[in-house]
Length: 422
Image 1 (tube, rainbow, N blue to C red):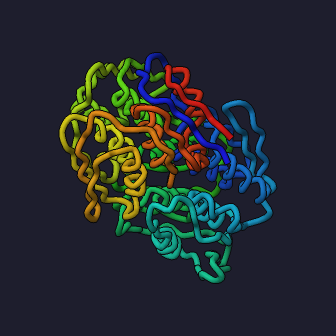
Image 2: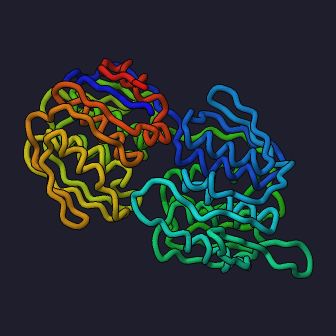
Image 3: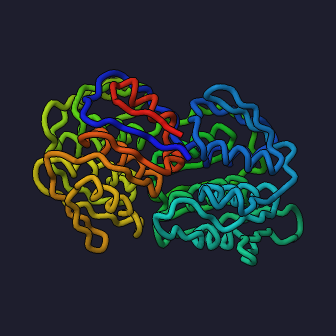
């Protein structure tokens, strides 16, 4: 099993290129199931989850021609309308094949998902939405069976008005893809507003879909009979951007992100300025300078455009060595404080009650052997290792490889003393 060894105490300097967004790439790959034509995707990140999704699509009959940073998918030969448990258990995003399969082929069999152990992310929103569009759904032996009943004419879903009880990113994406090929107009209310939802909408529109309102809480999709091939560039990863910025704010230094987008990071940039960082943005670059100990900052997670849950752990690491005390409130996932125990092993002073953590900043963390529990917790532990005295060894870094492209190489290029060990 691979680990990361980090010798703390160096500041970060230089440029780092931001990869394509994992959370945009995965649903957009699933959009390849909606057409028999080729879908060419650029700026694809080299991640474990992306490879898993590609494997799943290939297993269904999609052809995937991979080049460095790009993939061309073709769904002309799809013949297996199933996402098996062994694929879905490692990656919850596999649920995103459900909407496209039912929309184009009239049926699907998808295992109930697994993924990070950060809380229950119910699929009932996906199921209720498809039922409202006319699909018949049964759950048996851990699989969702969805079918459009044979009526007169083609087996097509019907447009519907769907209200989400909870804001759900994958729910919004699944039903938006399903609605693209439905008969009639679908209105998604209380829809997720995340930039990754907007990126998926841009790709679907390039494929011939009729979608209005992506990025707002009401999305209107007018179904079309078929979609065609397209070329689309995956948006930059805002969470990777935020992670590198927090790392430099915690460790000190002067870094510039390239191929980044400041407009989708406003909440994170504000919090970093509050912590004492100087930030300049121009075009697709973001520069951060930090030459003092950070100030503690309070954080409360909420759906976009509020502060992202995927940046909560990284800011907790920053607060561990900041001046003052901070409160971190997690409102999205109930198990998302599993990194607290590991940070305490490095000497962090953190008290947790329910969904609130209170962090009292100390001058210095101490290196130790720690274990990653989920994707973003891994990033938080890397940041903690960068600022800890002595060596920190992080175990179970396969979580990290699911969502960060070559993180140790990128941090090394910025001057961090970090290496991967087997």
